[in-house]
Image (cartoon, rainbow, N blue to C red; front, side, top):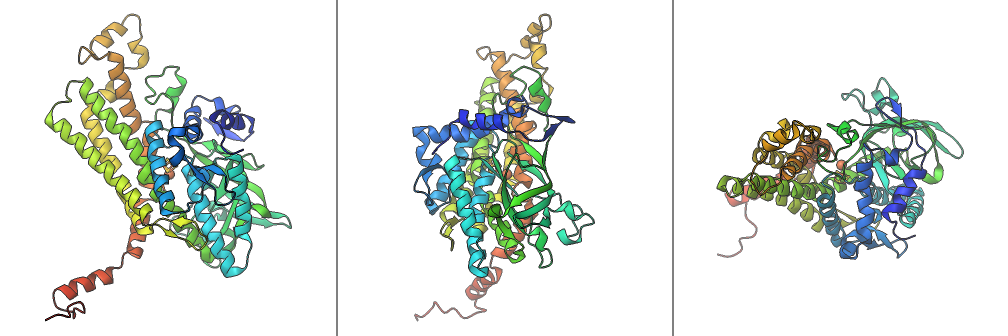
Length: 490
Ligand code: SF4
Ligand code: FE
């Protein structure tokens, strides 16, 4: 199989039996659950667009492992052009779904594990890279959605994995067998977990030499025995159970975050890609985080496009579209959004080939990209709320609009420009609510802050990657404190 259809993807999920809980109850047919389904629809779009000839160039690539055409979400980047296309693909999907579409975490993990395992093998004579290539061939052949999995529960933040009162606060190996390892722990806020086929687990952070049991990287199918999933709540999530389609804001799509518990889970050796190499944990974490920080320069920009569109639409609907301050605010939103995109493209264009052969983004620029992402979407959302007016948080429910007695009055007093149907205003305001306060705000705002590492994580990387001494020397040379070797003319 080269490329799966959205229907085939959905059928895969319907066959999967997993231990999933939500609102204190076990969920059986999760693929058809109204709260979960929008996130499955978003993932399905990654399959749908790959089959569309219009998007073939950015949605698909030629595998360096098999020579076959594959979904770009399973591709190992072979050039800076591939890195740029990745960002373009993510912007497109953000535009089409208006939310986090969740398949990028796996793509970013594939690329980081691929080049890190190569370097581990080179240094230590291990066989992780070969195993990982076999795994990637399987992923590409089956066109699987794989959730990259990094963030541990982390217990006491002042202590590392090895000093925690509960060693399970960070996922670790609890038993070694002839045929594999047994792991225990929990990965928190896992984006796109139960709408994936497989999980690719990485360590959470740079580890010390005596923290070998936490230096574990592996992949397992979602329905592996011992896995327990607890679905995360999102603001306004139960609106999806009300039966209407206006108050949910985004009619089709949404994200998902899942508490993922590994309750003594067996992993066979052929699926283990790092086991105890603590000195490479930092490389794996930094590279994965770097790829995902690049990703935000695409996906958040695409979602930003939908929010800018919503702000423009509501201003027009309400009769304020021609006011100069409104136009100026929309320009500001575009400026901020395109700045994020510029960062995503820049860190891609400045990428480099790794020893393993796939391409890595420029790490400094990727961190700058993500640092901006921790701020600009909030300002874009603030401006959208400014332009929407307050009705997007005080408007009566869909049921009140449809009520036989008060409905006509609710509609009469919710009218704006005569030529704009009241329902259009209602829908657009709910979309703005969804993007800036509701379910999609998880992906557009809070994830912009904390996803791929909280702001301080990028500042640490920026400190490490910027050569301040060099900059100081530039200044000292210009003002005559240092000799200027360039001036060789009189
Ligand atoms: Fe992809 Fe963005 Fe969601 Fe990460 S936050 S999975 S990059 S859409
Ligand atoms: Fe993310």
